Length: 378
Image 1 (cartoon, rainbow, N blue to C red):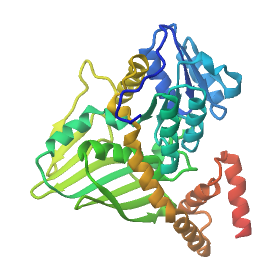
Image 2 (cartoon, helix red, strand yellow; image 1 turned 180 degrees about the vertical axis):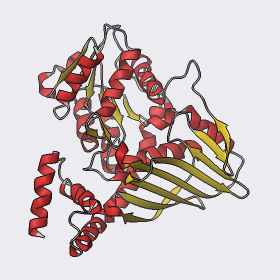
Image 3 (cartoon, helix red, strand yellow; image 1 turned 45 degrees about the vertical axis):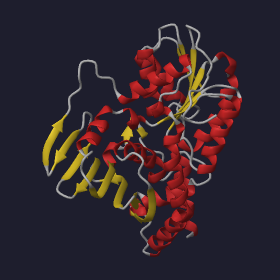
């Protein structure tokens, strides 16, 4: 069964139960959206051991009816559920999705759908053999504003493309939680977003990895890509001085900039604002549109093309290519920094946090102990 074909799926009963695996900030955003779409009789169960206490507190604060929180999947009768949304730790997406499909449940998987191309193809194979709906959640595919930018530059001939995605250190916490998973690299985290945007603005383009460099302990990575015959520079950074979201297209005659650090975004031409968008009365957020399309697919068996997992293959391929030498470069960086006796530098701590969690995610307390032990043995 090809990815492009409509998929036959389980059909909803009028009253339904959905399972959300995960309990962090984005999982709660999704639950909030579900509550605005589903009927009041529908039941949502959120499963998270790590975020269980926050979930319980949040559900009470929101005064949500028919929203439950549990810590372990084993306490559930999975046959009671119509579908599953996977939004736990990124490193667990593959295992969680495969487990749910093995119970014959249709799934929506938050980005990244997988960390490797091999995992991606195993998921596609499992869904195909079981005739199950497998949907990939790339929220930027549901932003109408990006389509507007694509129209603006349609007749231009790009000479150079830049994408800048940086997060300010002060913006990396919410509800007492870090807004990024320190156990995964910034490119594993953000490249699915980057290529979602690229595949809208530059459809059918061919991409080839040229090189990448690390800075600030891996908190910043600069990736050089050849997009057809056009040079493309991707800068991704955590703990930066500024929060930035920019796609810059240099053409023969003009420079276009899509600035999406806030929504609605703005479009600039040669430094002057070309379009400034506003949220219309019937505006629905990209996440609301995404979730609505997934729920519709569960009813009618037709998968919206933007939920098609094919959009997630390209970032998996690039993650594979970068990972081939990334850890080696990160270890070299750590070694160089230790020689400088810079054990208290934020950049070194950042690199150590990532390396020490290569096998599994650790709590803050566990990380602190391991980092101190690492310094003692270094």
